[in-house]
Length: 378
Image (cartoon, rainbow, N blue to C red; front, top):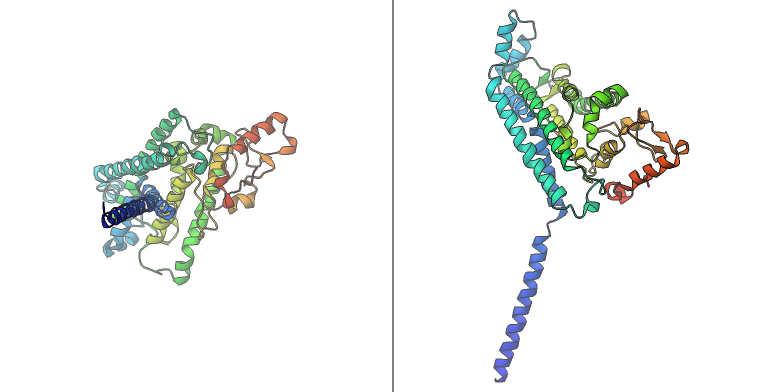
């Protein structure tokens, strides 16, 4: 072999080696999806699940349709008086409710509940089951298969109730039923347009705080709310796994602004979407944290602690209520299912057995679930 052929051979080998190295680098780069892309996609899916699983998407569409029809706006005013014939009045207001609205709302609820909820479950609880310390609020504890099936069944029952209720409200709105929701910007003045969102949001969240706290009183907890606390390690499917009486009562709180407080349709629908989105996040059992523009919103671990320790951290979207009323979890307190009223038990009064049990509970929490990756309760 002459020198030229040798040089060609060496050059070819160097070129092949370079190409192989380049391909490996490209594969490495493309196989690593940035965290913001993954978290953005997951947030989008959770948002869709939130607005569809109770059938509220149908109510949102109803408000949009009504906003496009000026005649329906006039009907809202003219029909605030008592009807002369109740049967005829109900028929007018709920025309088209069955089967169109109910069947559609229920099917879509099931589709997204199991579709997106199932995706989240598979993505974390199946595909990342071997490394729970990287993402799970309680990495040492898991719901049993029996409880997972249980929460899906109970959740579906609540979904059906919610879908029927949302379908009824959507039909009511489309047929011109009375509502305080309006569609013209600044109809009640620019000041109200600015403050209506924080006012209604804080009001409903504060009422929900007390509603939740009342359901933790011994009698109501035992007969109603205990069902939801079956899931000590909640998942996204736990969010609607609630006793039907409790489910309807909390829905009444969220429906209340529709008939009591003037609020723009976009503001109202956006507020509900936000609440339902964080309802799923907070029950996911995943170490999601609030974003920089949400100083009022507690991290996911806040509500996960509620399921782990029972009678503490009653707030949902505003952590301030628990701080105001002394029901936020404190590191020098012990909390259990049989210690009611959100005050806990002082460590100084605990027995050795209680301290040991509480210490184990604290070690079951994931430090990564807290801000600055620090478990402040250890």
